[in-house]
Structures are given as structure tokens and as C-alpha cells.
Length: 239
Image (cartoon, rainbow, N blue to C red; front, side, top):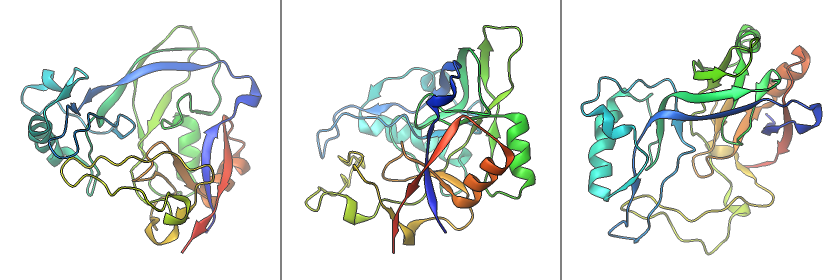
């Protein structure tokens, strides 16, 4: 199986832009007692997760940093609502994208590398092809135009990792207390084949959550159906 990195296709002249943020989120960590890091990872998002059953819902509406113990307390409140095996880190987001949009959109929209939006009709075509794990989530986005597309956010589960060969050999392990890991995107990323999912055609990586990955089945279906707005860059794998 071949894999590809998904990026926005800027060659087609689409002007559409979505300015939005997820409705709820966990706080970042303010000075981990173990590694002394202050951090958050807002690229992890579960737009299908509704936090309205959670007590003190307003606590999840404001982006901020909290002591590690408070983050852990809030994390445990949302954990029962998450998809099975979901990865959670400080700053993780939940619920629909809320904001505004305008312009001319393709079938896919990826204004930010870690967010992938799709027109409803395009998603239905892909699902009819039998592609695995495609979940489109509604958005609360107001369009500044009369004729607007129905865009959905694709929920991208963190699965799979980079192969150690493309990472610095002397890198520090993740903090055992808060999970902080100081990694930057390699110039030539390589996927660890042993960690890649067998039941998903679209996902993001656990250790590089800004990298959206698809299988050749997904890429070929998009090209065959004429679904535009994104390009596919080959990603090598190592066993």
C-alpha cells in the first residue's frame, strides 16, 4: 500500500477561506512539574464529540493554560465521550468549527494543513466508493455570500508514526508526566509501516499531528471522481 501527504492545491485559484475555531477545548499545560514545559496541541480535534453533557461546560470554552493537575481533571471529564482509543493532549479541541467563511471553494478545503474540509456531495461519493473511516462533521460557519457550499469537517484520528530513520537520533523521549515531545517536521518524512492502520484511508499521525495522511485508495478515488482542492505528495514507508 502506498501513502500520500495531503496539501492544499493553490494552483486552481480558489479564493475560499474559513476563519473558525472549534467550540470547546482542553486547556494547555502551564509549566509541567517534570519537564517545565508550557504547551498545547490544538491540531488534535474531535469535531464529532459533543461536550454538552460535561459539568461546568463554560470551562471548556476559553483557550488558556492551566496547571497540569487541572488539565488532567478536565481531561478525565471528556474521556468517556471520545472515540475508542482516542489520543488526548493539552489543547485538544472538540465540537464543530464555529466562525465565518467566504470565497470560492473547491471540493476539498485545507486552509490549514491539519484541517480538512469537504463538500457534502464529495464525501458521499467517496463513501459510496467504500473508503474506510470517513466521518464528516457539521460546522457552525456563517458564509458571507448568498450561494454557499455545505462544507463538513473530516474527523482525522491520530494513528501511525514517523519512522525513526527520519528523526534526530539523539532526540529526547516524551515527558513521562505531561507527554511533551520536542519534534519538528522532518524535511523528508518517512512513515513507520508497522504502525499504520489497516482500517482507515485517511488519518493524521500520532507524533506529527499536522501531517494528514491518506492511502492510495483515497487518492485514486479522488482523482477518478474529479474531486479538487488538494494535492497528494508521496510518503515513503519503512517496515
